[in-house]
Amino acid sequence: MAVKGFLREKSLYLLLVVFALVLPFLITDRYVFQIVIMGCLFSICTLSMNLILGYTGQVSLAHAGFFGIGSYSVALMTKEGVSFWLALPLASLLAAATGLLIGLPTLRTRGSYFAIATLCFGVIISVVAGNWIEVTGGYTGIVGIALPSPLFFPGIGPISFQTMVAQYYLVLAFLLLTLLVMHRLVYSLFGLGFMAIRNNEILAEAVGVNTFAGKLLSFVVANFFAGLAGGIYASLIGSISPSTASIDLTFNWLIYLLLGGAATLAGPILGAFVIPVILDQIQFLQGYRMIIFGILLIVVIIYFPRGIMGAISDLVRRARACYERGKGMKRAAAG
Amino acid sequence: MQLFLQQIFNGVMIGSTYAIVALGLTLVFGILNIPNFAHGHLYMLGAYLCFFLMNQYGFGYWISLVFSVVIMAMMGMLVERLVYRPLQDRPQMSSFISAIGALIILENGVIVIWGPQGRRIPNPYPGIVKLLGITMSYQRLLVIVSAIALIIMLQIFIKKTTAGMTIEAVAQNREGAMLVGINVNRVSSITFAISAATAAAAACLVAPIFMISPTMGAFLGMKAFAIVILGGLGSISGAIMGGYILGLLEALGGGYLSAAYKDVYAFGALILILAIRPTGLFGREVS
Image (cartoon, rainbow over all chains, first blue to last red; front, side, top):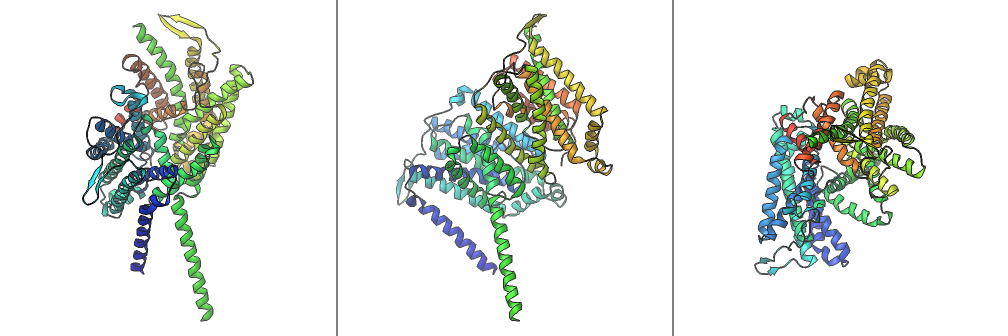
């Protein structure tokens, strides 16, 4: 049974990956395709936010700040002539290192204190981005950031990233990498430690989990991927401004993550695709759009604290229980 | 010297509004343990109500102020009932996220009704006085004096009236307060009403001096949180002191260091102090 379940799960994953790989052949509309690319990119953000917020239970609201660090670093480095493929890991490492520096003091705090401290840091980043004009270009930002330089694959030849299809595969590759790392991390001993911290920090400490080191690791890894996503964003979009690091972006990801389902691996991706599509569909509502989202956020946190994924797994469990009961009754009637 | 005194005056003026706003927040956050992250947005809505009543209905400044305060008191109760009460037995983080939902609604609601652009409330007292070389407008003096009056009134309310004392009882021991027959839900309601009403009062007082805009609440709310944490959760005197200190810090920092970074001094100070004392300057542990 366990083996069969495992195989079924594996084949489901495989199916999804194949679907993602052939997706460019199914979508012809450029606008829809752009939404898909952004969905992949923001999935990296929500997945990494999920690590610190969903699995470790620490509400970091500096995520867009680290995304901003990644995007500004890549923009500045590529402007200086550094290759994108060197700039991207450097930018991610810079985001991770900043995360370490900020995490050391702020992770000593708990609950709302941590949320507010990280929020303050996020705001500082965006204010600095808006005012440090010599470096960041102030509120106009940086424009004309080069696309990733062509990659040479043995046997295939150089691949340039001029086309949307190539850009899509680039983002998808990084999304799969993120997913792989998250999967390995969450199902490792570290991951269990993260969840122990989330469920009861004092108890986790008492049974020997190094809670501070756990929180720090989770925070640094999350910020590494936030920086990575920011770097890709800067290069693909070609222009950045302080709004790239604004708290609005953090709040958007928070909505995607919570509505999709925190502390699951599918939920953040689901949220990052479904919510922007819904937002796009209800564009005619204009300003009322965000009001509806505010209401939705409150309703979800009150009634469906585990988001869409939680609601789905509840439904599945209920259906299965119903089915089992039906089978039991039949057997009882026959016997 | 003249610049210094002028900055001190401005700092005390802006500090007065910080003190009132932080006071309202410390009642809710420190005493009810609800991280009302939408507090700054209630302040913003208060200012808009004042603007709306004066512009649309031609009410006088003081009548608009009183109406705004009363409406916001009811609004505070509504927010408590709809946004926070269903989550009272859940981790604090749930309330925090619910609060983000509330602030999105408030900010975009104001944008839908009154537009995203900044507005100006006509200054009811445009005159100025000069003293020791510093320029003081009547409205700024009014802010300082009213803030002190409000703070004293609030102190009397909490220490001397039954309703106020029940708030303090809940703060000291929630279960104990329930045991002696205090309706904790009603206390939550009253606390939220006072919190929102004082925020509205501060907003209406200071609105004729600065522009009002839908986004003005976000930074103010965060600063109020910084003050409350630094001054010690639930400490009323800490919130008042913290408010004035931050006002002075911003005015002097803005005058002497850099005005562009004025808004981040509070946030930087908060991170620094939390680095040294994770529970705030005079804080106690939160769950």
